[in-house]
Image (cartoon, rainbow, N blue to C red):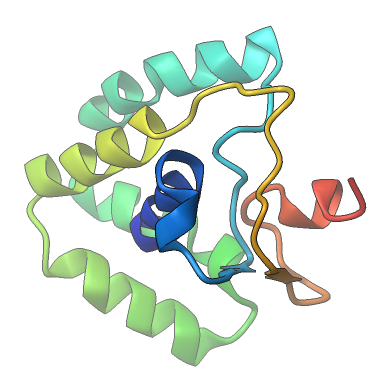
Length: 129
């Protein structure tokens, strides 16, 4: 989950005069239009998470974060600092930041980065746009 990335983008959206530049490292564009299916998945995601055992929930997406076992272990440990309720609340905060703004463009200098094997977010898919 990349809550800080969403906060950065929301600041650039709401208060561009306060933002000098934006760095997006393997993330999701919060203003990119999403398909009806993607919107539906997001709407039901926290309910589905609530049904899963917390241990399964913490391990579910580790391979998306990195191919490195060390990074996966780090992410798992970070998730383990949260309760299941806090984990789902964080996720709900992350998805609440998503809003379609088809004509919006970040007006500040921006650096987009992603790893060759990154599978999280949509930056790799939309970077050229």
